Length: 501
Ligand code: SF4
Image (cartoon, rainbow, N blue to C red; front, side, top):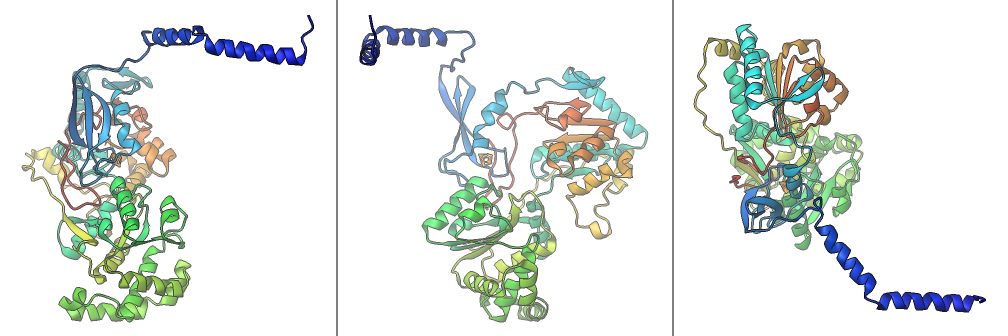
């Protein structure tokens, strides 16, 4: 039989219609779906009583409220907590991933000890007694001060307990990762002689002048900042981003003003020059201390010229003038500072200039302005010191903090990096690393890797074999954020206090 094109097409269409109308293929698909669901390797969602637990996320400094969906007491999902002051029901992908951290297949579940370059499992009892023995030897040799600790934060109780432990052994060498919060604290201490920090009430402002703060790139309390950005847009407020590069935040701002890298402080000086010269400041802000203000005024007018600011920043003087007038004439202006995500500190001088802009705008501790927050401190009982502890604590810190030019330098991780890289590195005999991955996060990871290799005893408190844990002699698995009982004494960007329940 001859098959021509017409009969071939008719045959094809008939076969397709017949297959679609017959129930057999659909039945086969249904059966195979049911069959594969019963395979032993197919994950089956837990069934049982559903309940929720509320807590706060500690995977970044944001402090979002979250609720955990539990099925038969097993956490199965993380959701944002409605009406929470930080995130009001929102959640970011990192917060959602807490379940993966909890059940991740590569999670370290038992202590590990490195033997001939490979990790072997050991019991908690053995790990603790072996490390304790090494610390005892250090103390007996008069080297208690050579114990050092590096943590991601020194704000929460867990880190502070670790600090107490290091101090009790006889060492001052506790180092926390540096962030812009440290600059805020130092500035508040210097300016107001009080222990506090700064919160920015962006949501209620009508003009945000951001000195490189990545408001929608994850600055401080990311969800709070993103919500604030949306709210200010809804309310018809203005948002100006000063930044050398076109970041996501710069792209979404009402105006992006490119600036030469590192010259944001010079721009602040130029703005202050215009504000002071044209008397654009709020009288109420300066009326309390006219004499001091007049001294400041003449200094700013003489030294911080507009031309100098324009030359250094690469922003023309007309734009600087216009920006200063727009900022000062807004009803509730706010200058926010801390570059990028706020992971690096600012110089004291720069921070003070940005703060002064807020001060002259009369927005300190006012709705839509900059709030000075209390840093609640835990009042720990005194450490019981024996002779070795006292001798160790009498020795100055390895990085020279508290001495001369470094008198105010409480948090100087970058200098710890130098220390690890220097000839003095022999001064570290034992290093505890908690909630931190310096081999990945610090700038010169090659040198840091080498330096940590040279520390005789490195102990990592980590749930995962990250880059630093891989270098350690012992890995003591830590709790994930859903398991740990940890306070959040201060949440960047808001003025209240939240506690992880
Ligand atoms: S923004 Fe930070 S605190 Fe909030 S859910 Fe994401 S990781 Fe957690």
